[in-house]
Length: 281
Length: 296
Image 1 (cartoon, one colour):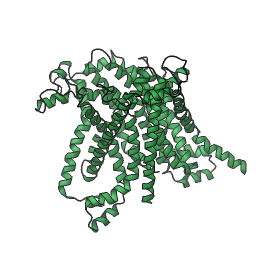
Image 2 (cartoon, rainbow over the protein chains, first blue to last red; image 1 turned 45 degrees about the vertical axis):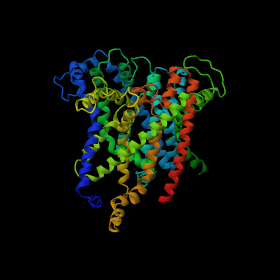
Image 3 (cartoon, chains in turn red, cyan; image 1 turned 30 degrees about the vertical axis):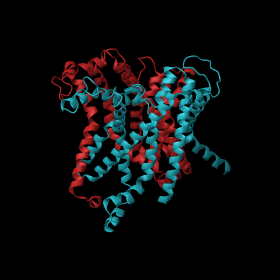
Image 4 (cartoon, chains in turn cyan, red; image 1 turned 90 degrees about the vertical axis):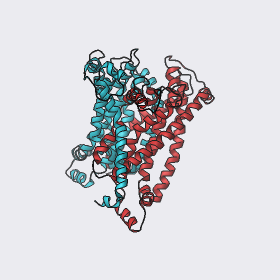
C-alpha cells in the first residue's frame, strides 16, 4: 500500500491510465480475435461484409479443410517433435551449464552474460548460410534431426541466461549439507538444486518450446519436403498457392497461434523476472 | 590432495562442457566458416568454389542496393525501437498506476509477444487486405478515406505500416521487463523525495531512471540487435517490397544467397552486418559500464 501513496496523483492520471491501457489492449488483442472470428465465418461473409464482427453463420468447415485436405496434422506432429526434442536437449544442456557457472565458475558470470549477448547478436541470416552448407555436407538437409541441432544454437544460450537467475536463488548451505552426507556433485545437482528450481525450469522449458514452435527462417531453408515441414513453413507454403482462401488460412493460423498464446500466458510472470534477473547479474 | 582437487575441477568442467560445445560447434564454427566463404565464390547448389579475395566485399560495397537496404535498416531499427520503448514504457507506468484489473490488462497486452512470425504476417495481411480487409473497409465506412487505403502496397504507407506492426509485436516485451525493473526501485526513496517536495516527474527522472537504466539499457541493446537482424516479419509480409522500400540488410542477404544463389557474396553481406553490430554493441557496453560505475 506504500506504493499507492507514492503514486498518488489524483483521479485524472488514473483515468488516463485506464483509457490508455484499454486502447492498447484492444490493439494488442485484435489480430488474435480477428483470426478466430474469420476462421469460423462463412466464405461469402468475409468478403461481402468485411467489417462485421460476429459471424452470421458459425462454421467449422475451414478447420475440417485444414486437417482433412491439407494434412495439417502431419505438420503439427513435425513441429511437436522438433520443438519437443529441442526443448528436452536444450534444457538438459542449459540447466547443467547454468548450474555449473553459478556454482563452480561464479567469476565468469559477467563474462558469460556478454558472451550470451554476443551470440544473441549473430544475425540468424548469418548462421543460415553455414548451416545450409554444413547440413548439405553431412547429409542432414531436409532432416528433422538436423533442424533440432540447429535450434540448439538459439535455445541453449537463451535458456542458460534465464536459468542462471533461478540457480542463483539456491542456498549454498543446503547443498553443503548434502555434500557432507556424501553426495557427489552430480547427485547434489539433480537431487538438491534441480528440485528447488523446478518451477523455473518448467517455465523456461515452455518458453523454449514456444520459440522452437514459432521459428521460421531455419525451417524454411533446411526443410523442403512438405511431409517434414513444421507448421510455420507449411502455413507459408499455403499462402503461395494459387487460390488464396482467407478462411482456411485463418483457421490454420488459429491452430498455430492458440497453443503459443495459452502457454505463454501461463509462464509470462516467471520469464519476465528471470530475464531481468539474468540481465543484471 | 592434488589429484582430488584436479578431479573436482574436471567434474565441475563437465557441467559446462555441453554448453561450451554448443557455443563452439553451432555458433563459433559457423561464424568462422561464414567469414571463410565470404572470400569464395560459393554457390548454393554447385559444390566447387574458388577463392576470389575481396571481390565479394567490393561487389557488395559498390552496390547501391546494399546501401539503400542498410539505410532502410537503420530507419527501421530506430523507428521501431523508439516506438517500442515509448509504448512499452508508458504502458508499464500506466499498469503501475492502476489498482484494479492489473493482471487482466497485463495478460491481454502481452498477447502479441506469443505470436509466431508467420501468424503475425498472415493476420496483419488479412486485417490490412486492400479488398476485404477489416481496417481499410472500416476507415472507408467511418469516412476517413474515400477509397480503401493500400497499407502494404502503397509506397507512402508501407514503411510506417511495417514499423507499426513491429511496435505492436515488440512493445509487450519492453513493458514486461520495465515492469519487473520498476519493482527493484526502493520505495522509500520516493517517499523521501515526496517529503522534500519533489514533483512526480522529478522523482521519475532522479530516482526511477537511474535505478532501472542498467537493466533497461541491456534490454535496449538486445532489442536493437534483434530488430536490426529481424528477417521473418519483413520477408513474410512484404518480401522487401514494394520496389525495395522495406528491404533491410537481412532480406538483401537472403535474396543474394537464396534468390541469386550466391552464398559467397551473401556471406560477405552478413559478415559486414555482424561487424557493424559488434561496433554498436561495443559502444553500448561502454555506456552500460559507465552507468554501473555511477550507480556504484
